[in-house]
Length: 623
Image (cartoon, rainbow, N blue to C red; front, side, top):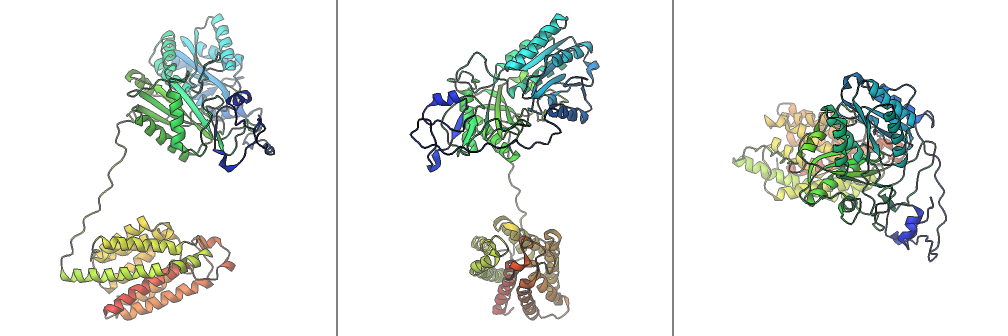
């Protein structure tokens, strides 16, 4: 496939067979063009054969099917053929059998949908290759000999599949075996239908499900054939890919530039859409085309319609992206007045490792929905709740914080004022240290330690403007913990939050000096437990630990609060300075060579500065 893309005529796109190119708006670059008005860039080298975890290229389809059967006791292989069947075929006596299949590489389709309530068996071809007629016929004979009353072949609309399954059907009928065939074509990419018709895509899986439910209920072959034929005409599928996949032993099947995606997967849909489009915009484009009456292959979904939505991973899309696409599809459909009965999200019919997604819409009523909801043991069918997506409440109100007892005493009011002074000075101190802490952090981290602490300081300042803080030390520390966890961010926010949450517990019963010493102990213990740091690891814990050792003296009778606190602050500052000579044992700095760590740890410096600010306010108040 050529790399050049004609930017002058849609006819050229059709001649090259490049499918739908969703292309960026030039990005300020001049692209090569066959009209010769623009210079042609040098051709990019083609990628080499892609890496695959296979034993051999020739045997990969057999090995994959064998692996599925080996891990699923409800499946068996048909000897001499690439065929998987239900292991309980004898239980199907007197019922209709359902067979499907196609080329391998579309896993979990189709063998993942074998089970009670879905397929009886599957015939697999080599990768992206129709299965052999002999294997299809062998599968038909196997289910017939088990006592089934007829077989329905569910075939995707591709020339090879139609020919091979059709020939096997005719041979089986010549042997007196009742066999019918439904050809599924759900591709909504075509703006103009051609003789070959619509391709069979992920919607085929829904036909497996509907037919399986009918067969399980004992419905006859002719009725199943008629009913699923009607269902197959009420659905559409459209895919989009970010790049190609690669068949084992081969190079990628096609190439897309960095500023292109392909919509429709090989069929011309629309020529110009920026690649920088968001997921919401891509999904809206897909749904617009799928439902547009100007599109010959559209599925009519007027407002008020009820649908089953399938969001299908084509193999290489991340779960994160799949969730974003699913949300976009639900929101877009509901915004159009479409009611979503069920949403199936996952990998149903892939194209090896192709990073892309397809959307399938099936128009449903209550009887059809019951068939979709019917029980199945097929391993790849999702366990979806039998609840409508549209109309369901999707969020719950956040829990309210427990009401704190009001501080009504004069002493409480004075304590609250003192706490405001302490917090304000701590904030002023941290804001003044922002650049210094960032400079220290550049040697061993992201260079944002000062920014993180300033963010915390501004959050506290904003909180203080809302009203006086609680006078209860336990309540105050708990409030600060929630505030820092929400606003400060980073590991510092989590560590301060842990420290304050744990420190608040001993202060619920008492607020004397021994209780404050116990609070320091509890905070340090929590930091070590969850942060995995220890004294000497060159972290903020070093400063706090040194202060905590001095504050043990508060537990002695007659302890002088300010005198001991002064010693604790000096010890914290000395410990912070000593971190310049330590080898980092925890935190981001532990990944940096010790030869580069010749400055104090910024977290330890910040913690010591906080303690110094607290001391200065208490000294000024004569506490």
